[in-house]
Amino acid sequence: MSTTHGLVYAPPLASARPSWLSRYVQVLVVLDVLCAALVGLAVVQLRFLGEAVALGGIDYRVLAVLSAPAWAAALALSGAYERRVVGLGTDEFRRVLGSGVRGLAGLAVLLVATKADVARSVLAVDLPAVVALTLIGRWAARNALHKLRRRGRCVHRVLVVGSSAECARLLNNLSRHAEAGMQVVGCCTEGVGDALGVPVLGPVEEAGLRAIATGVDTVAVAGTSSLGEDGLRRLAWAVERRGVDLLVAPGLTYVAVPRIVMRPVDGTPLLHVHEPTLEGPKKLLKDAFDRVIALLALALCTPLVAVLALGVVITSRGPAFFRQERTGRDGRTFRIWKLRTMVDGAAAVAVTGNDADGLLFKLRRDPRITPFGRFLRRWSLDELPQLLNVLTGSMSLVGPRPPLPTEVARYGEDVRRRLLVRPGLTGLWQVSGRSDLPWDEAVRLDLQYVENWSLALDLVILLRTLAAVLRRRGAY
Image (cartoon, rainbow, N blue to C red; front, side):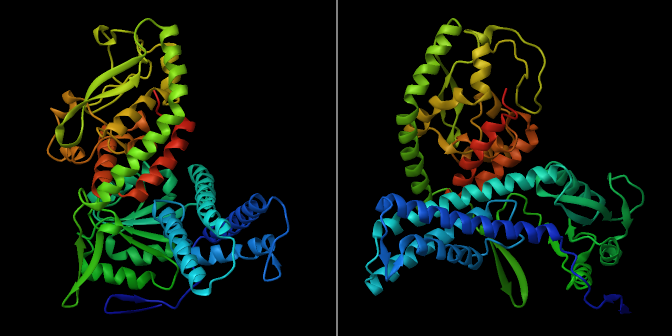
């Protein structure tokens, strides 16, 4: 290793990239191929009822198995196996969906161009089913990975760099999300000692050397106020060719990647941040999606809601349904529908204590909740009547938590941005901890959704909602 003008140069060494990451990607490849093969075989069997049908002399079932690796290749071309997207965030699922859409379009063009004598019904059902099963498989694999990470396995070894305040902010965020798999081994910041809860390994100027010495696979720059432009460039040079990921917090906390575009101006890279999409065709598509799904869900769930409503009436005195005024988009009030879970006249019953912070009021053992009501809350069944609110347009399937008018009256200017979109039956707040979340975290998640919502994100949240309900964490 040599040093010239303060810059550290070193020959390329063995990659610091963790071995578990390569194994995880290999598991995903095998899982995706299996999903494609199983769906192909099932569709062919159902379409031809077990009869042997061939295309060009090759049995359809053999073609289904042989074409399965092509699905993995399509996912690879879309970047669905990139290490920066697997295991966390929604980008992985978006890329799977994108591969399916492009695959359907490509097949349609190919069939028209070649006029091939292929069973159209097989292709029309096969690819959407493959996409759906792949998403389920990826979700299951991710859940397994997150469980391992909560036990301290399959984690990235991270060195955090920045000022004390910047490091503390990033460390606080990482500590709340063990599923991200970021195991911080130390910080490079000003000062000495363990005031941040992790070892301070040296000043920011030595971050490159400390990263190499500790063998981390990720360097997270919490902020550039201490490093500066030259320091960040030297840090990048110090860790390059070593399999070390360099992450830089841009300070745009709530802005998702699709809204950020690099725009060079006279050689200077600038980040162009698109405004959040709150109107236009995408909103119309979201509205249509909400109402169609709500209508179908109501048709399926009405018998269940009728049975549950009967249970409410039988187990406690009072009406089956509970209506309450909430605040919706642009501050307009509406009546929210729920199955009653508390004793009739609960508002007049005095209770003490509060297990929530901020503007929320929650009691883990609220004496006003009936035994049957506790069962309904545990499985979120009391919220099924809110599908009526979605159908009538006062709510959305996915969105911020619908607040009480008394809460809105105490909102600050930043928190009021939650009212730019319709409140949701579910949302990022629900799939991330529900009532266990502190107020600041719930607000952060709601604002993150407002700034970055999309139909693809809604689909991911709806899938995660099922897992959150089954886990029953934070439901009280």
